Image (cartoon, each protein chain N blue to C red):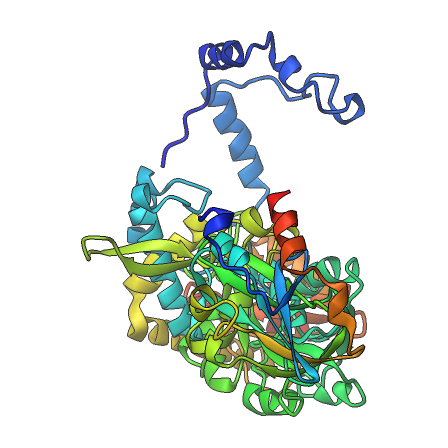
Length: 132
Length: 448
């Protein structure tokens, strides 16, 4: 596992305390897990994602991510409806390790409240939380 | 793997190491009211000869083949066990109740479980089998919980012809968690009535046992199709007599999503009703939701074949309350016995044996019918069938027991609407002479 200073924390996303990230893309929001989260989990071997069209509340479980060490739940950063899931992860779950903020995205959702991302942690607040 | 108990000396050293005076001090954190203040009330020790005498007395309470002629199955079957199974099981290396975690010291046990899984998937026609569960009943309950997890639904339908004990265990597992169980009635021919599903929506699973508790073979193919008219619903096929699949098309070939049941028939003695063997198999697409352990084949760093526990990340010791099941073990020795049994009987042998069971049961059924007993259900059977005797057979049943003939099970405890119905079973262990003797007893009583 790496030191926090060795990890990548994207500027253009917001973070949750459960280590998901969320990026505003037009009216929609993309969601994945942070570099810190993938590093903690180790080699990811399976990602279980929801069906497109499903709706979840903030904090609800939307899937699971399985590494060689553990299985962890994935939680919704905001309330919304799933508009797409990253089907590449079915064959290449390692994308989550390699490109957590790009090719390793997990779901795309339409948030119920468009401005809601502002309520999540920004890069500095997330880093502060990690450093405890 | 061997088990070495701690000696008093070991315990003293360990306590000294952590700086404690006594074992009581070690357990001081456990609240007083949770601890037993008195000594365990165990009977005093016996000498070896006293113990043998005690065990003989206990054993004498049982009606055991070949002293008794057993025509009773109902979930526990009297089959011949080849001596090779018994001899191989006596090897000390296999004596563990636990599934091994450590591949570096457990290759033999892990490979044996891997072989068990392979043979189980072949017999049941499924993609993947787990390392085994406790028994048929808990395997079915776990199958239904798995369907509930997969579908995120809260209701299951279970045939009334699933073994009554299995249904009780299902009840125990499911109702406390707030899940609903719909009971499917049975038809006049002795098969499950799926019209009981009419108007029932959002079922996580439909469970049918074949051969069912009345011994009748269910029409799994058309039932599977009916169940799958709701694409999400899982078709669970249970069984108490896996030998039937030596002859019948496998659950997998009939569309089962999960096949599960009791494996006692495959080389495990009936003992006093246990221990059994929970066989559990499913489709590859569901493997991550399968309860229990799974042994996989891999290669070590030198490229040699080896075996490991796989998908353990979903299990209780890592995931606690979110685990796929609270089972964190398997029935290792029983699974091993069944592996040896299946391997030594072989594919052709299992087919022949199944044929023998079926033919003997048909012979007995015909003989009883010829002397005036009624066969109430017309569906085809494997090695068990239901007979309706004229009222008053109970007395004959007791009399036969004194003559060391166990003439089946009176099922009215489980199905009060079917008085005087007895479930009879014939296996390869029942000779024609024994069957003729039973038929004659019934005939002479009827004509008396």
